Image 1 (cartoon, rainbow, N blue to C red):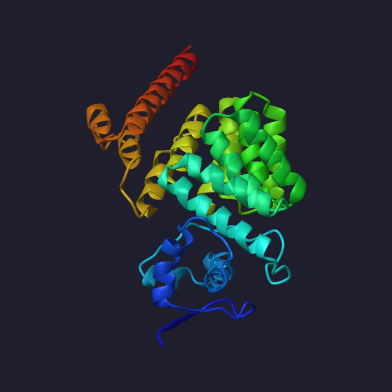
Image 2: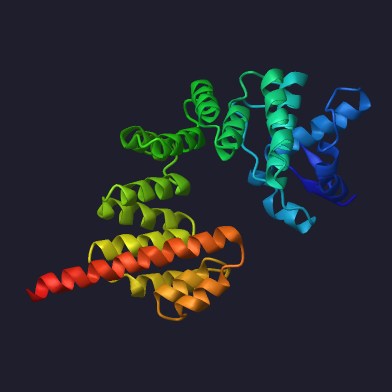
Length: 308
């Protein structure tokens, strides 16, 4: 049989057909224990929560690139109760609904995951993210708080709650949560990115540039490069050579690569604007144009002061 080996700890073996069919099986509703069908669902749940760590390349070979699942707060090997298994199935199906943009179904599945296992901290974390995306900040904050209470080592929960504090203008609490996320996970690129942008908006360009460099070293990201370039510009540093070197390492030339080209003089302003195809990209284009104009004005002012 053509099989793919799972984590040896869990003794899971799935055929490639099972791997490809798994998402469709998970999308069936409702998820209930109906005897023989539950055995198949349980096999998938055990496999799925370890997927990124154990079968990343194999899943791509099978034609399915899954969402990145979060490992359970408690080892599923130690807790085999149906409620915990089904809780993780609902949580991960909620992730699929969220990726598809079906927010209401995602919330329903996260809520059911919490009902089945009130200690599932990642279900609170994921539901909080959806509330955050819906601009329901109070519910988002409540879910992030509960995720942290259940799992104080959940770096993602601290990072996400930090964005809530930042949106509210509570810089001190936001920095504290980003700091904790980084302490728990020193390779948390998003926490470095978010803290760097917060420092930028607060006028602390030295720390902003340092955090954005760290974020980009952990995960190549065109946006991190652009924000670091702007931060260095506010420090009277010429970041063009560094931006060009980082851009050469990017695998994709998709947006916002056109902004990099514009900042490096490789595209005109009109060409950069025309490269923005989606509404959010058009909005970003105007933002980066405004930042570029501020930077040019800042440079002119500093040059005039030197001449005086």
